[in-house]
Image (cartoon, rainbow, N blue to C red; front, side, top):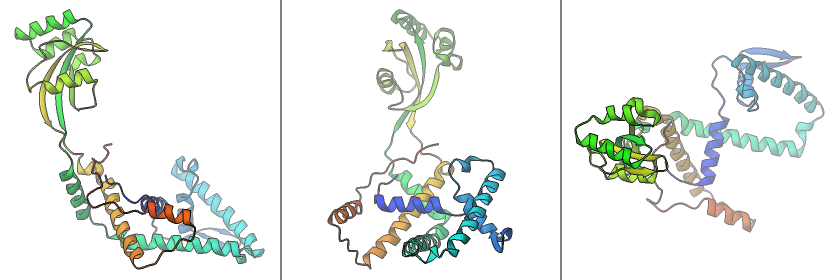
Length: 293
């Protein structure tokens, strides 16, 4: 719905992707020599499976994850025996991983765990209220090959014939069995000639001249006009919740940045960072409908 700091959004998306499933029972599920593998480790292994393996049925995923966890335990023990965990390179990597997990834990505590249903609904209502009005029409049409056929249909309509019945009888469009009913549509959904004619008609009226498109000649009737309804809350609440979490995340980041001095010695990186973290002007972020599924 809203554009915002690209780096923060990327970090937010990474956090969401890295969340591990919660578990209540951390039982030992396997032993590798004297080393134990707990349910929590299996859960983490499942959450971090290769995307191809992640498509497997649940039982097969657990087997693949357990196999990976056993392999990790075996070689990790050998690596520790060779004191690879004492190298500077390993310690730097572990510090980075520790920082990332602390970041995620802080995010979970101060964002994920405190978002309420009322906040999500309030954000949905705010976004809906800000949406620009978009007109929709509910139309039927009769499609024929020639202009003369279309003119004849218009004469029959003028004489009192029912539009839907004529569509069933005369139309060459596949939807003829529904009386030519196209349902509701907004601008940009139909070819221009058809769209212009449909939106120009008043509710309850039909086109008095044939409308030519690449498909043939149309006679159009507008059954209704309305403002397009917003997507139902139930359909987009997960996306709206992500927006609420993202805003809370950005608030945390801005507060942290305000209390810390950030210095970047590489000039190119500094300029890139400053540009990527440039704050938008108040009210400059465009508001758009949540994608419908």
